[in-house]
Each structure stands twice: as structure tokens, then as C-alpha cells.
Image 1 (tube, rainbow, N blue to C red):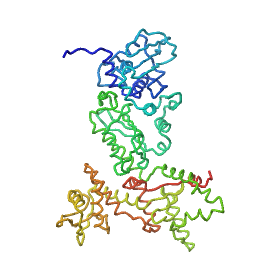
Image 2 (cartoon, helix red, strand yellow):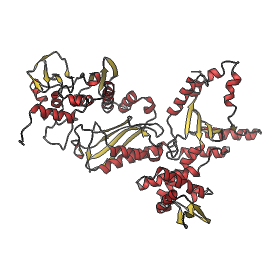
Image 3 (cartoon, helix red, strand yellow):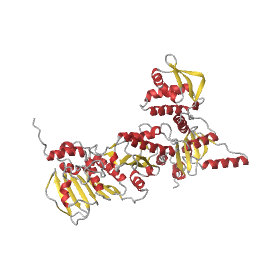
Image 4 (cartoon, one colour):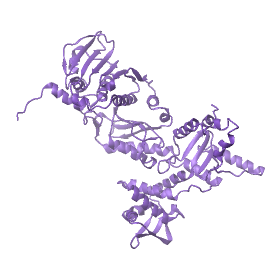
Length: 598
């Protein structure tokens, strides 16, 4: 079989298959070219999901007339002045995007160089072009792609529907806009404007303003700011900044996760896994955190030439970057303590006010059905605090209440349905799930004791012999050493049983037999993770759950307020061990909304 050189047009089509996977891939390359040209305004138009038309116009520095034909030649670029890949300072650098796109479409390139009085245009059809001719373009560059993949129909038929391809383009533009807040973006699809955002003013809050405009106020108003750095060499640092969401603001997928390295949107499983591990036991199973993070590293510390779409990178020291991510996020999450997202209460209020059967304005708006509607409260038990009878006692009680009200979680008013504490602070009312809150407090105490190697053990006067089913027994047997690390001394005891001789002192008078049985059952159902620390956290979480204040237990005023004060100083107390919120706040404005007073 004869070895021969492939024709140039076929080479370009093969390259296009690697670089341009779908319309959004071509759009990404064009936007990156505009950003590299120092554009401050980028206008995008697509039709039929980008299959019929992709047009990108910018106000950048433009291209000189003599260089326009070079722009659509393979491996011709202005972005590697030193002819080296060790210090890449531009988003593009390979010089293959435009020729690859032009090889499989009808492409028109118009550009006016910043120092020129005349704009010029070039038409390319499936890689073939004629002469450059004058254009009426007034500023920057405009690239229009028509009939994408018409020269490679096999690729065309594997594209998704126009609606899906349009959504891919939209998501790409949002990411580009997030990481470039000083650039304005407009986006039209099939004649409809989907985005029109102006450049942000250069200020300390420009990233947060752009995040608010693109990701919404629910995230930006409660986002936790991240800002940190790690030293690489004497004069070089890896820096991180951005915003993360509270653990209780989580999503069912990773669509609200944005990670940028040196201005590039990156999809990296290792880094995403590192971020998720930083949230550890604060997220419900199967849920994803929300974040928008920017990492900046020296150009010689990173290799961006590892993926055709430049969506993956390699670091000289990936462990340093993972450490920077996990450490920065963990530190800020721990300092956020008891916070939970207000989205939970907002959603509840919206559902409540939209439901005609329980809307308070309707409940009390008619005397004819008042008794029927008020039956909603008949089966609810609310235990108020005991009122002071003597004048001196009343004064002391009022003073104590005012002191507690000044705290973020306020002063306990009463216990609702033997499970929820209702408190009042300066902003409104807070409802606390007593079991979920105490579960987290117990877990954090156990984690702190283990990390500081200060777990106190309590010897049982009568060792507890526990019979277990075969599968839970095997789980306990496999993890006897691990359980010893957190304060349990467990030995095998005949066939089908174990004996517990020592327990963590924090468990006090808990039902040890039931804790071990429940632990074996839970772990046999869910399994254990591979990481040692993750195993420890999972086991501690299960133990803390069974050790905590149970639902249905009456608490007095002192116990309730003590629980609130503990929450305010305990890391991650805004959510229980399973990621559920421990408290929900209702501001005075929220309450007035329920009564249609706003």
C-alpha cells in the first residue's frame, strides 16, 4: 500500500474535527480571538443553533490587510512572539482555529486595523479563497460562519437539535462573560436578544457585579468570598479569588460550577473533585455546590497545550493547586458557621402565597370559612416559654431575652411540635431543627477531638455484647482499627457478635448497642469511601446522628438558648451531617409578605 501525502483541504477538515466539535466550539475560538485583540465589546449572532450562522463582531485592534490571508492559513499566528510554548499569554496560540473552521464552512472575515483608514474582507468557502477586497466595516473585526460542517456532512448529522446547540452557545457566552467583566457582551439567537451586558466599571467589586448580573442575586447576595495565595517560588505565587455558595445552596447538576485558570474556562475532574471534597459532609448526597472561582498562576507553571479545545490544563505541581483550593474553601466554609441560604425560605413563601388553600389573606379574609381554614392549626402543638408572674422575675426575664436577641440566631421563644425551636432576632424569626442542629454540633466536636488526638474514652463497667447480621458484622470487623481511632474499643466475641469495651466519652449515656447496630446497617447499605478521612467522617456522621437530641424531646428555655449559642460558634452548623439546613430565617419583610402587607 502506497504512503502518500493527504491534500491540504482534507488535512484542514481532519483538524476541524478535533478543534471544532460543534457550533459552540467554533464560537469559543472566535470569542477568544476577539479577547486576544483587546476587544471591550463583543456582539454575537447565531441562527439555527449556529448551524446556519455564527457571527462575532468586536471592537478590537483588527488585522492588517496583508495579514488577513495569513489568518486563515494553518499554524499562522501572532500569539507566539518567542516561538515557545512555555509562556503562553493569549487564549489562542496554535493558529489553526480559523483555517479549520473555514475548511468546513462558508466563512467571511472583515477587519479594520486600528491604524488603518480602510477595512478589508475575505471570503473562504471550504478552504478556498480569492483576493481581499474593501469592506465598509467601521471598527474591529467581524467573522461570519455560514453552513457550518456543510463540507463534512457526517459531522453535521451528529449535532443535536438547534435548541440544544443554542443552549451550548449560550452557556459558553455566559462563561466568557463571567471571566471578562470589563468586556461587554450581546447575544442574539434567531432574532431574539438573549443577553446584553455592559462592561463593568474597574473596581474592587467588578467580578461580583458581573456574577450578580449573570448568576443572579440569590447566589451573589449570600456568596462567600474566596481570596488566597500559595507561594510557588521566591517571587511567584498561585492566587485564587472568587465566590462560593453556602452548602445549602446546592444544585442537582454541575451547571452552576465555573472554574477559570488564567482566564480560561476549565473542565477538570480532579479540581472539581477537590472542590467537592472541601464541602465534604456539608452537602446532601448527589447534590453539587455552586461556585465561580478564578485561579491565576505563572504562565510557565501551566501547560495549556494538552487538549484540542484547551479545556484541560496540566500544572507543574497539581498538589499545590488542589491544596490551595481545598484549604481556601474549607477555611471560609468553617468561618461561615450557622449560615443557610435564604432561598429555602423564599421558595417556601412563594409556594405558600401561591396556594389559595393556605394563603393567609384568604384564610382571614372571609368570616364564612374562617373556622374551616383555622382548623389547619388544630393539630399543631406549640409549647411557649413559661411567663414570669412576679415583677422582679419579669424584669430579669426581659433582660435575659434582650441579651439573647442581640445574637444572630436570637432568643428562643418556644418549641414547635417538639422538634423545632422558634427564636427571634433583630431581623425577624428563625426556625431551628433541634435534631439537625445538635447532630452537626456533636459531629464537629468529635471531629475536633480526633484531629487534635484528644478523644477521651470511657470504659464500660459492663462490656456491651452485640449480635449482628452477617453483612453488618463484616463491616464492623473490617473497620475495628478505624473505629479505635475515634474512641471505640471493639473485639470479636464468638460467632456473629462483637463486644464493646470502651466508647468515646462524648457519647455519654447513649444506647451503645443501638449505635453499633445502626452503624453496621447504614454502612452495609451505603458502603464506605476509599479515602481514610472520608471513612472517618462518614462513621462520625452516623454516630453523631444517633447520639443527637431526638425529635420529639422537650427542651427548656436554657437548653434551647444554649443550643443556639453553640450553633453560632460551631463550623458548618448551617447544615446537618446529611447536608440539610439546620435553620430557616423569616425576615419581617417575609412575614409581612405572607399577610399581603407589602
